[in-house]
Image (cartoon, rainbow, N blue to C red; front, side, top):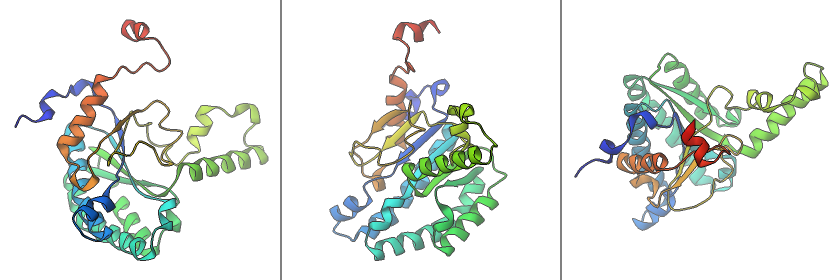
Length: 249
């Protein structure tokens, strides 16, 4: 079968793709297995999509791995997820280095369980010199939390007279977000057929193209990724301008 890869325009790739990895629980249910089975099989999709993105030349890939709202799930599932994260990061470290992929993370990281935080910190340090692609994990993250923390930070700078109210603009806001070191995503993908962004990068997705895939995350592979990128490339990105203006520019 002809791969969709051959139809992708290499000059029109998004620099940054963000993915909401959804559907692990439903995938497990379809296989008459506990939800944890779905999370375990979702690791394969993470590996395949990460490697495919790096091979394409995508510079930044953000994966929504665990939200602040996910703590509301059954404790046994949360505990298993944290253990799975520790073991996966350890196993995949060589793969990240082999593919020259740098690992970063955003979120309320210091509130993660100690073993999870230490495994994440070690992986970030071990891949810090890699330069092919940056893989960003959103862990214990929510956009409302991020915006709240950004507001507190700016308020503190104003209170200490390091910043004037009249100085606050989009650049100042960007500089105080956890994503300040990365460009905004141009493409956001959500799997499993759900059509919402679930408190994910609300500020940063302002002009992203949103593509929703019916594929459950454990079944999502490089061809699914290529399909989403092709959908992105079919769209006209106007940024408030008319189509005629975009053509002229």
